[in-house]
Length: 239
Image (cartoon, rainbow, N blue to C red; front, side):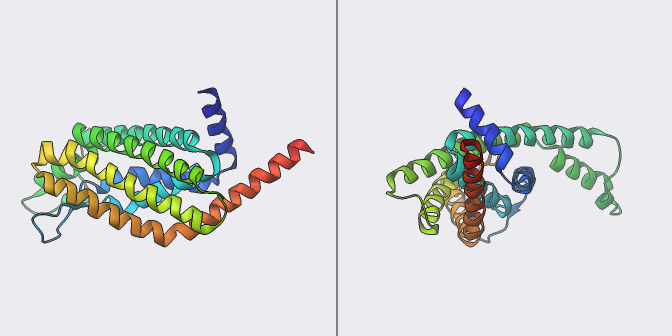
């Protein structure tokens, strides 16, 4: 545990703050967007809008695992999850404060719309628990699978190897994330069938993998920059 904490502290010192900030914001945002389901026009296919941001979270975890190892990346995931729960608490308090949302001013429907907005931002316990469990499970799967693939490769250099690690770990972990959430929330509380849960998990994983492929060159450049900074700090210490 001490080694993992030391790796985590080292990571916080060298990772670009903007990257960590965007990742935490993405976690908060994807849980809000998960409240909106997408009308796919197909009865067997269920999907929510959370996938629009979740790819950024997994790309960041791939970068962190590549540079610092799975323990530090997982500790960051837990840290980000705690911040997300803190923001969920703030949203909940705001939803209970007497007042009216600007979008609720529709004649005859003010109370209904205002209550709906309060419930959306305030969240419900099962959505928060389900999303937290899904994220934590998938983070562990992503980070350690990414690391395991890296250990199997003869060399860890080059975009191709970074991409292989990222694409496989992201696809598997995103499927796990979507499936856990669908089973804990969609099936139990929304009545989704097992087919809908599975297709939601698979479709979401494919959609999020597409974003990962699109932005993985950026992730690789960030990883290279961090590696150079690590090398410079090591040379400074040993000089």
